[in-house]
Image 1 (cartoon, rainbow, N blue to C red):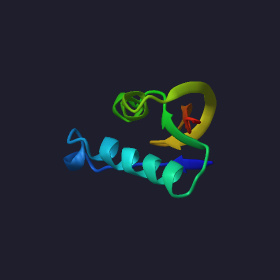
Image 2 (cartoon, rainbow, N blue to C red):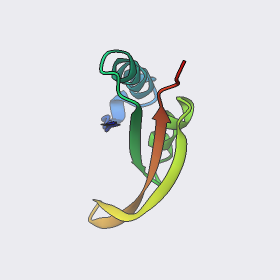
Image 3 (tube, helix red, strand yellow):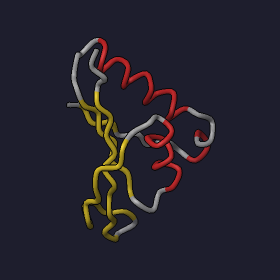
Length: 87
């Protein structure tokens, strides 16, 4: 299993960088590393970050309540995952 974390400065957002990078990492994970699962966790309130795994066909699997801290407050994380397709 692999877990992808992606952080972009404001001036680099809305250019498709995160989606293209994650797509390449997923391909590498499945093709070269031969792993079966990729996860991306994002803060539930971060709509731009959540859009990346949604765009890549990930499935939402659950919410981790107060799993991280952002701006000195606890935030929930959504777990999104993609599995290697067999055959």
